[in-house]
Image (cartoon, rainbow, N blue to C red; front, side):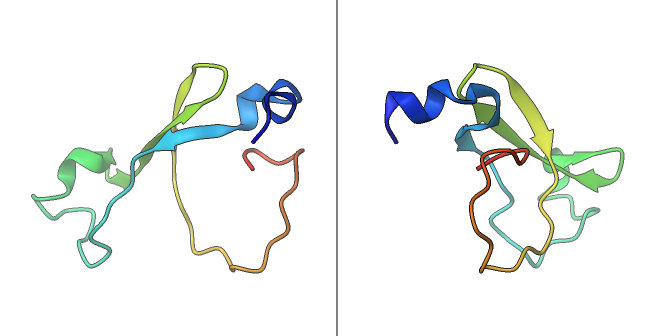
Length: 73
């Protein structure tokens, strides 16, 4: 990405994120419980403006077109 891309919306640009690598572990598995918040599996995402937010990934189809107006892109 170019600096111009970040300048258009730094609060929507994901720089780095953490996710649960083992998709076969449930929300109550002791090996994955550190990713949970009140029983919901969340991941931490770092955005270009410096803020960090918890995000929940859902099953998203792979044919989506990037949209700069969405929560992230």
